Image (cartoon, rainbow, N blue to C red; front, side, top):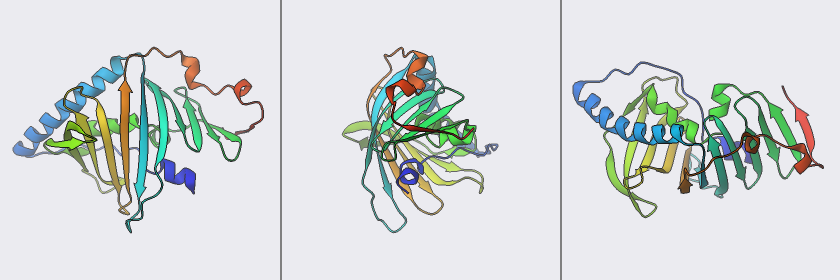
Length: 220
């Protein structure tokens, strides 16, 4: 149950074609320009690191205990170290270490499953299948930001809506907020974002030598 609470804030999208009126297209272009700038910077970097906190609120307004974590990312590869789990993904294989259980599950996830665990993979959603609303200026986590709301253009989406807060000064992501169709809301606060890294690929691979006592379950 806890694992589901940690990961349930992320799903991948079903592709769709955007169809805008003239005014909405202008609003979308403004929002897209902001997100494009961030994403292009990320893709050009050799690696980014940041800390994050995930707060989940169910449809009845019950707020679960926040989950803190540290992330290292490079292209499609990532490592997430959270309160209850560590996840490695090397672009093909994923390892999930459940700390309380002392078990590592190995799998070859689909693109949808990868986005289920990768915070920044969520940001690819803006590229297709969503209407982007005009950016709104707001203060998020004490910083001046653009908040961009994303509404799915297809009823098949798992999301009811998403919003992304982008720091006006640094053009980095401050917060991602998602609302599912069941009205469960998750808020991902991103802090200490730093793209000045050059991670070796080994960072994103589970090394059994570092965890000699854990049980490894191969689900491939």
